[in-house]
Length: 77
Image 1 (tube, rainbow, N blue to C red):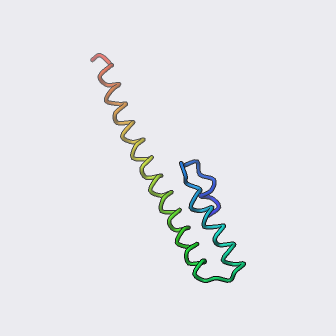
Image 2: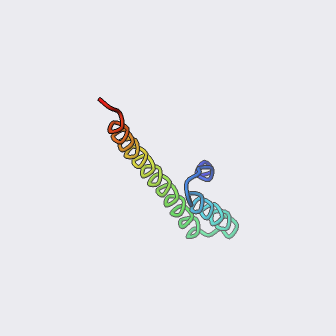
Image 3: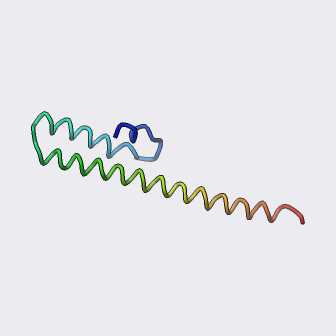
């Protein structure tokens, strides 16, 4: 969870931070439901980071394909 807080993705650290805050409050209050919600928030944060990483990789790959095709049109044969 701590590594997710270090990633420079947009809004990537909101869910893990909320999860850690709720986790600490749940431990203080000894509340099992809050622990379950904290785990769900942590899983949502991990899912968001994985989704954003995948989208950024696909965008980068498509950008490279576009760049290669644009450069191929500029080079005389």
